[in-house]
Length: 96
Image (cartoon, rainbow, N blue to C red):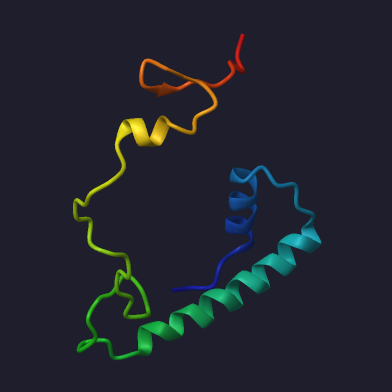
């Protein structure tokens, strides 16, 4: 890929609604060109035998299995509620 041009920097700055001076355009052109050249080094790597991945680490789900188990009843859940109505916790209204 060719280096980025000043016109491309100005175009992207315009799309991003950024006001850039001529000196900033010059500096951004150099900086972005260096970034692109550095990223292009990845094209030199031999990745034929590398499996695609979504994450660099081999992460496993460490959460427990979602299995049904005995739980408290509705009455037990509501027995310490300061206020309940029709089998539901009753709380003060916060919206008018």
